[in-house]
Amino acid sequence: MKFDLDQYLSEYRAENAIRIEFGQAIDPANAEVGWSTQPVCLNVDDDQWAYVRIYAARTPPDGPWIDFHDIESRPIEQELWNRLESGQLVSAGFYLISVDDPIARAQLIALRLQQKNERDALKRERVEAGLLVDPATAEMAWHHADVMDPYHDGFPDLPHASEGTCVGRERFARVPGGVWVNFGDLPEATREALWQRSDSTKLKFPNGVLDPEAGWLKG
Image (cartoon, rainbow, N blue to C red):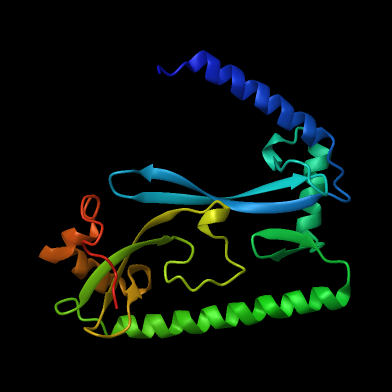
């Protein structure tokens, strides 16, 4: 079926008009606010992506989510931003939720701090392991992973692919038999040397498209 640009634009404008109408009905005093991380592809061939955080609001309990940019009323949008900046909305996983009970708020903040400390500890361990990687002898591999969570740590306060983030090709290296370290946690000189190795082609697209096991992260 041939793509009909005029029909697409007509449907888009109609849908956008509905979103704007819902946005005008949002009461910033009691609206629910959430966010998602949306991927934007910069270069398909090189597998390069950028990520932006999109904020949206809705009328509780089950109104449609409306992107802040689709809220044409400047006062409504500004009041929603004011609530975020004043701390009236606390980030709790993928959604931002209002926490009025001071005890519940303190517990939520303590939980997020604990999760952050755990992530920071893992980050230090992996960076230290990356310092031991010798580009000449290192093992290399890749797997598809949520780009926000390449190690599959599964921390609940991170946005995940099912919630709007992107699954991409994540590259790893390790001392033979050691701990796998994501390329992003390696020293720049080590990473560049690994890319110069003749067998680095197994890390690049389209390797693995026809053979899903090629270069796959194991062990």
